[in-house]
Length: 447
Image (tube, rainbow, N blue to C red; front, side, top):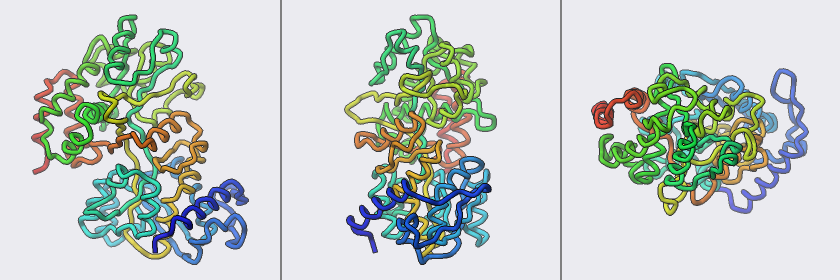
């Protein structure tokens, strides 16, 4: 049965108090000491007790990030007796299909691409979210987020972590010392770019080299610009291929991006000409900001981990970020990003219990407290976010004026999204005509 508003509020309050007062102690090898279900620290999890069993979770999250995630649900597991068995794989996208086809589907999977979850929904193997999970999801996330895990009006997944892919990184001291202000509109952005260029510094640094994935940072540029130039409706039509890749609206957005990315007066600070963009790694590309060799760098929130250890990331620090501004502020605050969705292939009581818990603000707070993560959950405690740009991203994502859209290439067929789109953007950066690039990608779309 769906939880009432009163019960939901009581649970949230109890969870928050338990989070602050938890007495579980961590063992040297990871995990926690076995918890007494009747102890005060387990009271917050009482609604999920009585569902003992094992729940398998499969995802692409590995290494330190996986360790942080496992710690974040450990007390829930200790207090409920639910044994969560986690496996992370770098081949998740391919192997989850193998597991399902082979009759060895995980109980829960964390999908980084909504389209992949939808594929299992259409095949009839994914399990819909029960009413209890749906109610938590509708309380915790905006409609923009939930739509990506909804098929034919039925919710199949709940959002988990979030990536903010509309950040423009910059040096606050460089801006203040040179009289520049953080732009609030696209026209302001161009004015700031011109002012920086007039002073003899390249306003932008860009890098799209990423091994076999070279080109993806340029797709982020285009996706961000389409969302701002054409608006969310055009963005959705483009992603769903309701308008072709070479539509005039997409050509218009490429023209706006061209004003920056292939402008020799604007790029590539610290590295060279426009052509250097294709051979500059995205990891290294933003570093000239620290030396004053470029003014700005468009890259996701995860780039906070790339700065040297002695770099202060703060509004008054060595580097900070702002949201790539809109063309028309009346359209709201456009944001392009990504994240994971909790989907399931089983509906046993213990699996439902884990799905419910992963949809709570308490889980979001515990995972955020482990660091290097944030969520679009509306009730996430922002004080748990150590990195200022994570807090900024979370604040923007929960703002009712924000218009969020998922990374377009992650929603497109793989042959395009992680194939011809990447290659086409690399060719475009290297000087290929826009019409040639757009025709190439359009002609590759699966029929």
